[in-house]
Amino acid sequence: MNDASAEQTTPVQPTILEVKDAQVIFSTVWESLVTEYGYEHLLFPKELILLGGAPGSGKGTQTNYILNARGLTCAPIVVSSLLKSPEARAKIDSGQLVGDKDVVGIIFRELLKKEYRDGALLDGFPRTRVQVECLKMLVDRINQLYTEYSNTSLAINFRRPIVHAMVLFVTEKTSVERQLLRGEEIIAHNAKVKETGIGKTLEIRETDIEIASATKRYQVFKEQTWDALQSLKEIYHYHFINAEGPIDEVEANVYKELRYQSSLELDPQTHDRLSPLPIAYEITLHARQELVKRLDSYEINHPELFNDVVQIIKTEFIPIISRHAFSGTARISTENEIFQKQQSLAMLIDVFSERGFQVTIDKQMQYIPERFDSSTGRIHNQEKPVYRIQIGFAGSTIRRG
Image 1 (cartoon, rainbow, N blue to C red):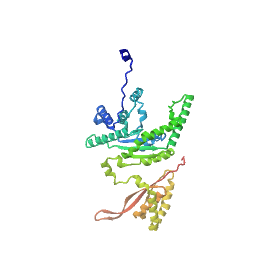
Image 2 (spheres, one colour):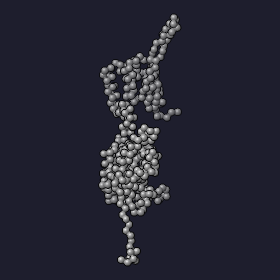
Image 3 (tube, rainbow, N blue to C red):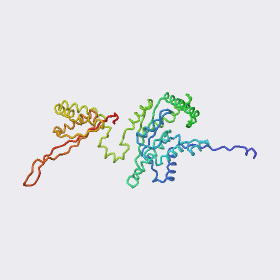
């Protein structure tokens, strides 16, 4: 081969292999974070909500509801949007893939932003087994920070993390139908923007308009992402949400799954301190059934006293309550001796509760001079209880004046 032909030969570009070792990826990203932020400033969210699901499962629709259910005010972290960052685009434009290492690095840095300190919702992460392993290592490190700083002045900054994995499930048929419906809506929206000049056109993808493409997108999800999402149930608190139905039905399923769980949220010592106290849900769950049982027991076991209490309510209380129909609040004082029997007060509260009123009772002692002892100058008083009863109810909605 002569020199001329050698000069014309195009050099072979070295193949850049993506690292697939989760431990190597995590260690590289973690070390860069320590260098960039400093160990004491690695303040990750207290709560992580991992939201996954097939195309058309309603992740975007349910995001705000999930955030509200958990009391979080931050915007969701949409992984697909993060991958449109200049760093990610530079890789894509140069022909490289945005691999697990890049995804993990971008997301971990995003989680360190101050607005996510109380919690963050990750839409679309993790999507691979490698990303699941990196997430697990991150949570382990956050727990390590929590332990290391637990007895220091910085303890409040390093909290035990809570991780919710939420998977919205829909069948292939529903997924394809919703993707195509989205396409129809975008086409109509863009036509209106073009006609009126108001608003911005939206991007429409091939999967939004072609059945074959929409079907393939669902199948890719089942083949590549479903396994990773399923593996989360072995590690974190896992919520499998049936997202087939209408929006309000799916929201009900989400609420049921995200009901208050103190054992996950509180520090272990705090939880142990509060655990003897019942939560409101436990008290109210069977409240109506318990109320009915008590009322029936009054009728069976104490019919005379029960009748007397009902008659007093009917003749003395209801007329006063009726005069306060507009305000929805009536305050009544009574010295009726029947209420000196503790059970009669319980009956009073239960009767009003059954009828839809809210009652609070305050017992106060009234001192009435009975006799004067001239030898000592002491006044002897008779104690007489006065019961001040406040009754609340829905006031009249009719406009006054």
